[in-house]
Image (cartoon, rainbow, N blue to C red; front, side):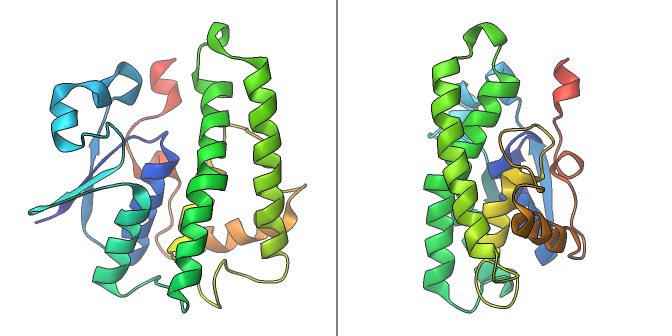
Length: 208
């Protein structure tokens, strides 16, 4: 049975799971979730994931939510992208969840997807500072290495990079963060890499 990933193209968290499966050669198909029209709040979706979030991985009798867990599941099944230090991979998955994507995604959403009249300059300013600090941490770590953990790409790379491939600006600039920019180019060069808007259904232009 082909795995299903409940997802939408604008979701950086869904992209982490989709990218991990694609680069691992894992057979999967996207199931579009109309997040921007409230599908994750419906009883039908909550029956799949009571947390009301994407992504959700479904295969046979296995249902998994949260991108990091899905990444770990696929890495364990395929034996790929596990890294050579499991604790360090987990450390960076947790860092991304708390300091990286949680800030990147929130600021990107507020600046680009939230209606202008609902945006808060104070919140945007606060989040921008958090994003700047997280990007500086990532840049410093990548200044002396090619990959987040060890000498090869791992799910830690795919987690930390998830939001950085999107065109909507939220503070990342490869000119200001050149080591991070070079690292993203290395990920882009991996066989079967694809942009999130090419990998999953759902694009901002469809709501214009």
